[in-house]
Length: 336
Image (cartoon, rainbow, N blue to C red; front, side):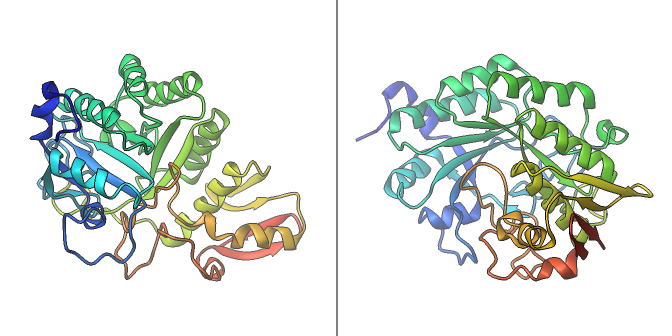
């Protein structure tokens, strides 16, 4: 017997893309996964109206449409996905819609949300979406969404319009204004390695956290078939130091950045050396960050590594002294 009213039956026959790891967790694909996702990731629409130079789904991209970042997203009917979500509802902690701004992206998303609202699955729902209509944000929350991610992606003011498209200031302001209306419910994504300076990255994180926007870091991943397929990956050491800086913001630990020749060369923290070493070695700094229970396995990397975002807490964090920590003093950390 259907769990949704008859007038919504059409949406059940629609295809929706599902991350390969999510399909495995839901029993819809027999594939080996190196780390189980704790969130079910669903992709709404394909072939975006926008033309971000790094995205497989961009308007002029020649990349495989089954890809978003380095993850494969096969199609499945929403009915099959819904049945599996109900059957395996104890095996995951969150559902996340990754929205591609295709032809009917918003109408389809709303219908998917309405079905989930009456399905009594009762897990938190997140949405990652490029949206500038505040009334749509309000509608999504009214349909039971717990958190909404409004990705800025590129934090270089100089390169924003060319790499991502749009206006940096208006995009930044919309995220901040939305977070003021929906306190504690807004996330943004920053992709490290898209021509930003260290100061731009620090400054963006500081302003977002100050305005109660949760920052989730991604490492730039070159995707074949995109204009940025040959763009260099971000060095692991640079990514690590900003994971640490993000952790300081997230934990509300006061610090002062040290910049030398435009690079973040260290931070001052009013604490003894032992406390700073404890902060640096905290494995939670280096796992996937974002909505609660989002581990996004191998979104930026292969299981062979290097792992930019660990899907689970690493048991040993001695890698930090190789990757980015040069020396620790009372009150100060110097980076490589």
